[in-house]
Length: 454
Image (cartoon, rainbow, N blue to C red; front, side):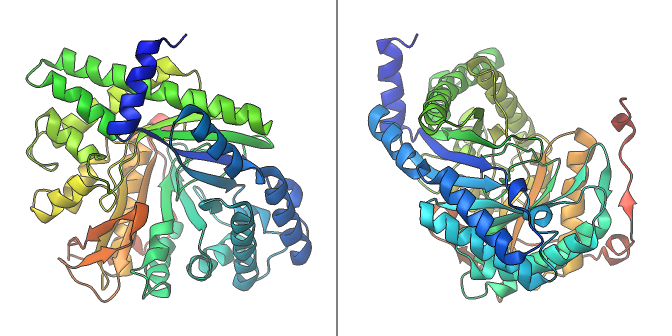
């Protein structure tokens, strides 16, 4: 039972420390929408999303009002469209039509974003999936709410380097297609290794093929709460530090569990998971970088940063799993540059580089996230960065991801300004030495030896 002291403590977290439920995401299976006719497929998709998620936004707002807990975003994830459209889609334009259908359905039900314009290519790809990849730049250009992700590797199958090389081009093409909007299209495109089936956070959310008909997943976030709690542990030993983070994560996850159960019951949809991710926003006081500074770093990027982040990530997970039997998704600490004012400050101070961020991704929840790079960066270099990050995920048996934003027409030191949740990002330098001969090899990097566990 939650006592009055815990209620008061939670209220304080919400009112003064930026605690919120970042998203209620409804996952919807579209397998029964598949048809050989494109028009029928579009109609099936639109009707099912509107039917299943018609009351999602209303439910989120009711819960927020009833419990006084901010529910910031209401979102939808669907079965990967590369699979759903494989029977009906004969061209890139056909897949773009499905993207427009998703966008129209998302607008009708009132959600912020819809994820699942996705493909699972960890080991190989079909001819239809190659057509789908080529459709991504245009699909993200002509839609407002659609998010895309492509899984190109796993610890079990290795890394599909043909897909990695192609994604280098796709990332550049997507940025060019959205030129004039600060390359916003690329901010809605994620490349994964070991993508989870139940992630509620965009832009990487999709309804995995292991999932049921529909499900409610909740993402809860509270960097400000953890930072505030750590202020009482200044100068304390590591045991006290870890216990403070763990106990705080437990309290945050309890809030997410409450909202998830309530939403699932009201919508008549099974509860899936709570994703406890310290996901920052551009708001002051809502920063993972500030937590690292409170732990004892002058800026993220200073010596000791990777160790501090590893400690933070592990304790967040330990606290979360004690609060809910179904913690899933990504769960841990996010380090997106544009969405975290403290990370932006570290980049502008010269403390944080792309290479240091890559090292940090070995121990954080996701990977290289919301990083602006010069617009003239070669596609081969983008593919090389993706390959590096996929290798970290593959070898360490963890989810890693890349969300790079080539800043078309901009150079190092310039700023991309997305506004809202995406924030702004200083353009960071990329190693100028070439990797063309490496990424242009064809085939697959084999899975590591520890993948053989049968």
